[in-house]
Length: 113
Image (cartoon, rainbow, N blue to C red; front, top):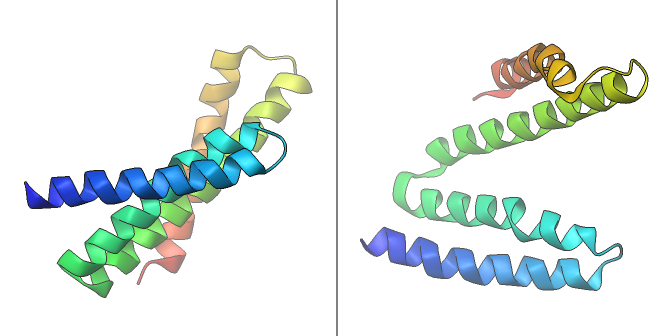
């Protein structure tokens, strides 16, 4: 119960700070981008460090980074398939899914401690 309360308070505070930073930046679409994922990841890593130690956190950090890189590659391929090839969103997403899997597991295999 204590961990949940700490996670709630710390997560809310960090999300608020990131939302304020995003609100100052232009374009305003950065506010939503900065408001969620980076702040929640930072709070999760900080809490995991205090509860599980740095070895556990290093594995989690590599997982987060490989997932982010895989999402970037997936998004790039999906956009290319949508704009250049004229495919439907569903078909482009299905065709780009192996790219996400290859990048995510490839980076994790190379970078994991």
